[in-house]
Image (tube, rainbow, N blue to C red; front, side):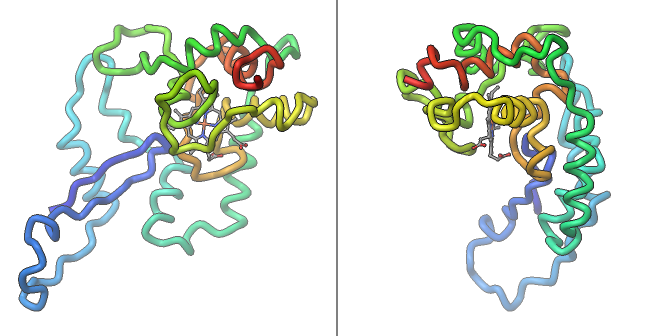
Amino acid sequence: MRITFKNSAGVLLLAVSGALIGGCANTESRPEVAEPTDEEIKQLMISSFKEKGIAKLDRVNQTELQKACSLAESDPGSLTDAKRVKLQEAALAAVKFPVDGKYLGDWKAGEKLAQTGVGFQFSDKEGTAAGGNCYACHQLAPEELSYGNLGPSLYQYGKLRGNSEEIMKYTWVKIWNSHAYNACSNMPRFGAEGILTETQMKDAMALLLSPDSPVNK
Ligand code: HEC
């Protein structure tokens, strides 16, 4: 039996549990099991994922980019460099930059949203303001000792990179849609998916780039 998970990038992750439960008794007598098709995996996910509250079944529908990245998990050759570049270019072209041209908001509000993972959960009400949950994957301010490491440490991000227009733009794009620079990134697409508002993204930017932010002390 196979259990299928979908990570934040919508990439299908497969964990073979049958082999674990069965132990390593007698591999020779085990019948060949055919790889499930993409459609079978999707149907399995649909049957095991129950709609609850605001979490609807459309969440299992993948974008073209997510489909390409899922396929590349089992067939790396399927995602050619040319295709990868094309997907990234399309993601980049859709990025919306701040209307007033200002990138930095309030780092204190940024720290709060980096700490909160509320929003889009089945237990949340429609329209609940979402957080960024950045600490779930990144180290940021050194005062916060509890952080995940799926993403790189962002401690001293601004101190190390400065805040040139180029760095501001790069960081904005990364937060808006991480796939624009890394097609199969596991980071949520905060702008592209409407998770954070423009103001919230500016606050996250200030947390990373403002010289006053504890991230840069
Ligand atoms: C589910 C995990 C996850 C969450 C949540 C997450 N990130 Fe990331 N982030 C990643 C991963 C993985 C990478 C590295 C891969 C990549 O660059 O796409 C990354 C890369 C980055 C980078 C680029 C770092 C570099 O060295 O260039 C920035 C900036 C960033 N994240 C900011 C944020 C901010 C701000 C938040 C919260 C609003 C956040 N991330 C939330 C997983 C996450």
